[in-house]
Length: 148
Image 1 (tube, rainbow, N blue to C red):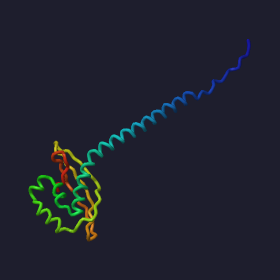
Image 2 (image 1 turned 90 degrees about the vertical axis):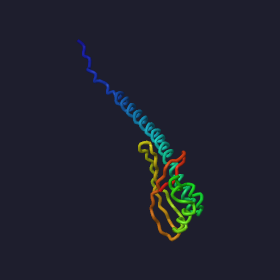
Image 3 (image 1 turned 135 degrees about the vertical axis):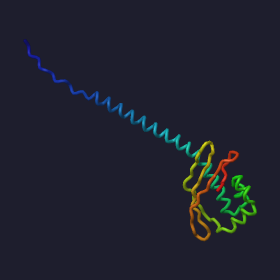
Image 4 (image 1 turned 90 degrees about the horizontal axis):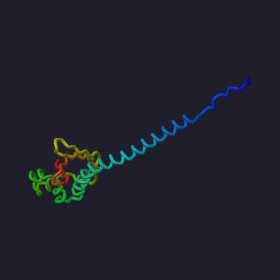
């Protein structure tokens, strides 16, 4: 009988390496998926709220520059039916002149097929006073209009 030494099994790090590679690949795929998903969500949100923000900006630029006709044209049909251009101009001239603004939060809601938007705006007047106002917008004939 010959003596054969018992060989201790080799320490194999191969299973650990495979597990680490698989975990790394899964994490990389999750990060890439999250980035791609975030890009599409950002694009969808911007496409939804962007036009509301632009309509609000167009209206306020006209108000700030004193172009009452252009501001009036940005109003919704209901407001234009309730208020003539002359009355709108009189109202605008009776208020302190807006010299600056910052559009903050913009929201779009769809309730039972009725799409509405709102924009929270920080206004600064010629007197130096500031106020926060929420503008309501509606979509008419494919365009957003200020309605309140």
